[in-house]
Image 1: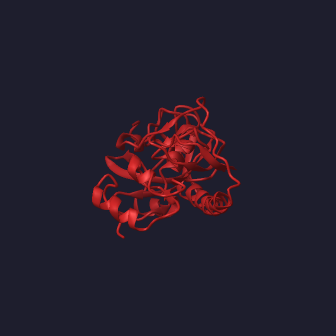
Image 2 (image 1 turned 60 degrees about the horizontal axis):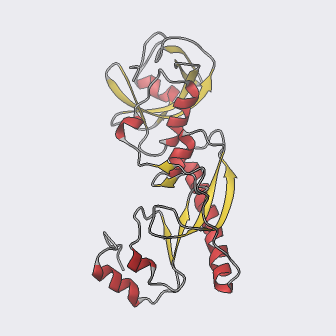
Image 3 (image 1 turned 30 degrees about the vertical axis):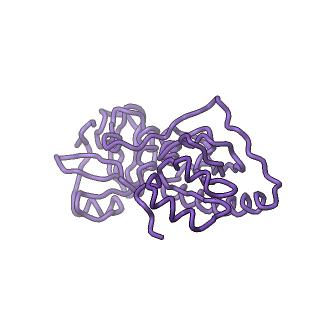
Length: 251
């Protein structure tokens, strides 16, 4: 069965009914299942959600956790209901967000954890030894879809904030910056000490470009010119030399 555009369609629902499933498992589907679909399987529908619900309900929980500077995240195995990630939780496990985690590396670790937990949850559900716990009404946050404007680096912000932005948008869509009217993607960076005007290149060394932020500085270690390849800073600068004192557009 190919993935239907919508499960609100009667024909798609009829196809699902044909399977006579005991349970439906959903991961990264992005849409709320309609009530007729939720009622088809004996044990309902279960969602593998990449956050510690009720924190970061919605479409982009991994990106939002990094952007917010969360120290931990995890996977929630949730019984689906009519709401947006509002159903009771069957199982949950926490993992740390590492200082160098990107959206890609954190997603991979969460996917591995989710695969382990869903097997455990389904076994427990079949054995009748698992109980769904309603989500707390406190601590609810929503992970809204990323807007295009959120990819643009604002150098007036602190280095920690920009660093989180770069990590949260790697591998897609990438953090946008501009220098000499040329559009760039910043893929990897690290916080550093330094002071200067926002967006000013403070120094260029073997580790990369050190750029001043509103507070602190960033060392850019991997970047990409529009239409080009992702390159280490040293390789990038051979084809696009920059000098200390030049400035990225502030935003």
